[in-house]
Image: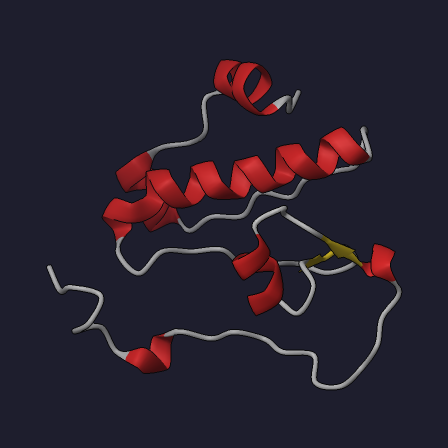
Length: 109
């Protein structure tokens, strides 16, 4: 596989919010300062966020990261809905998240 240095830089996108000032509660801060800074203050709460890896073999790590973020959101605001969207290719290769693990590891019921 290609190393990170060999990958096409055009595939990497970071959204910046320019000079706009938003209320502090508009974003979910992850607690990881470099990530929150790169995201312009954290993940936007009132939006869909696309999280994916470059290669299919990264699906487990990507799913774990996304589920950790969903768990973080749900600890702060219990009962919110979580929409999990994946491609048939990813589900065929990596499977679906395990329900028992969602509850025990991420607090998602």
